[in-house]
Length: 293
Image 1: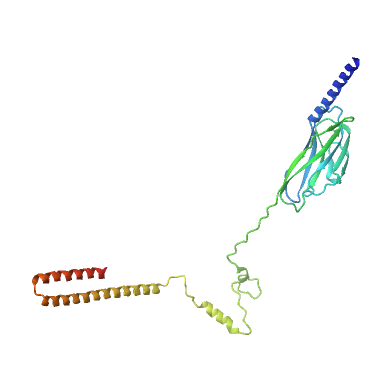
Image 2: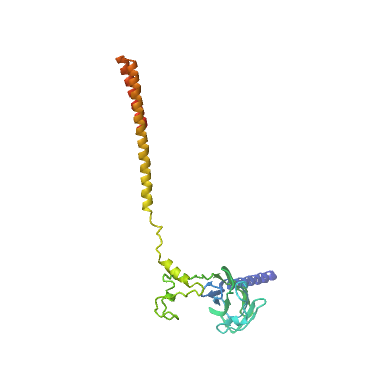
């Protein structure tokens, strides 16, 4: 019976110790802090490691160890000189091969404080991307008891620097610097520059000057005389067509009158003559409408 009671008491004590340890792990927290989370190629960033919520730490933290995790394709490799201890932490050692580090403190730490700083540099040839920096396997010691911490992490954006192409300045007076520059040799007037004479064909330069003085026809203006000539030709064509119509009409009337006269003399009946007259008159009117239409 006594053995059962002792075992029960021991179990309660172990449960109390385990609960206390878990509580300490849950409360104490490690942080990573940086000023700017947006970086460009070639820039550096300083990251600070700190502890929070040490209220359950009684004796004080006097040792730490962890493993730095970062992307070596984005950042240059970190070495021992990139770290700096803070607030009486010392004995810092960093192994670049496995990226693990350790540090200790003579007097235990039980208040919120910065622990160390390290510097990362972005490579020159990286593309725009997103990355993370964190500490894995982070553990601190209070003497006899080790405490496993959370994995602090920071997110960093690598942005591409925008290159602005300068616009070409407008130079409406292109060539004035040559023509109007009085400091050029041989240009005493400051306004014009004489063309060199061709030693083989000296008259060619004079021909060019004479040709430049000849007024060129302005093709942008409409040719008024050609337009008027075309209109006159169209009017003449219309008049000619109309004249031909009326000549044909008159010829037809004459032919009809001749037919009426012949019929009249062959048939002297007034009734028949009247009917024939009306018939030919209708034909003349119909032809007239057809011709004039």
